[in-house]
Length: 127
Image (cartoon, rainbow, N blue to C red):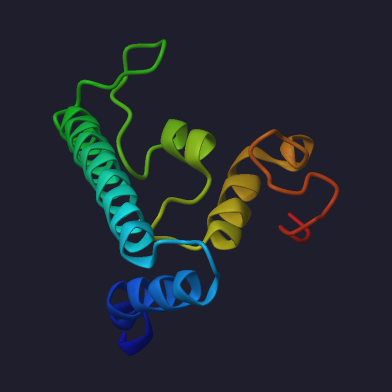
């Protein structure tokens, strides 16, 4: 964490020294512009991440409340067959392990389904 933490401290110094070495450039104005653009980009990124995190949390609560249903009207929840067919490995699990379990449940004909990352690769082994 030393390298990422030193970037905001050292990069303006490097930009100022590089601009000072080039004749005809105003180094303080260049460093000021660099810091202003960095601040603007940081504000935009913070706003995007805040809205994205809120949307992610709302979707998670929607699913946890049991409001997400398939075409038959059954609740799609973690561990259900519809969830495995749609996700094939969530952010916590092992995608290869989840893929093997899905192939074992759905059978040989579904090995080349769209959910597999590499359809030609037989990662499930014999069923």
